[in-house]
Amino acid sequence: MEHLNEMTDEQLALSYIKGDNRAFDLLLSRTQSKLFTYIMFVVRDHDMADDIFQETFVKVITKLQQGKYTNSGKFSAWLVRIAHNVIMDWYREQRLERVVEPTEDNDLSNISDELLDMNVENQFVNEQVLKDVRRMMDMLPPTQREVCYMRFYQEMSFKEIAEATGVSINTSLGRMRYAILNLRRMAREHHIVLQLD
Image: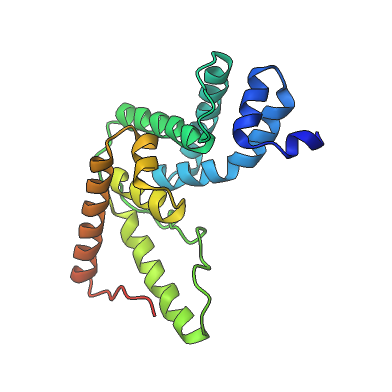
């Protein structure tokens, strides 16, 4: 097992394809938390996120066993792409409107609370600003919320976002642009100052 711990995610995937089930177990343990956080951020429902997470990994196993994965050095992007497709299928099935209504238990306070190291007063102000941004992000359409999450919380490039969501770079840039415009509009309407100290 020690040699498995030294492998990259891509190497583990290829090792699983060759029949090493322990490689998949390690791959799952490495990626499950980040993937579940992504899914939860987009769908806003814990039970549904569980279902989508499980369906995503069933598809991952199937695709790996069918040899539909090639080592491109981007296993995590490939994984997010599969999850994105499962989420979009779920949205199509549910025929939901594009805007998801926030609920009291669907906040983002569990994501990246410690972004900056600063004095106590500035930290308090910044925490309030970030809470305001999270609340406003809850009101964005799913595709805009998703691109914001991928860009700011997963630190993905727009090229990686485009690949993961199956759209062009221009479309992912456009979604970010509209997300920022919507956030600014909401901030103006609610007289919220969005400036970190």
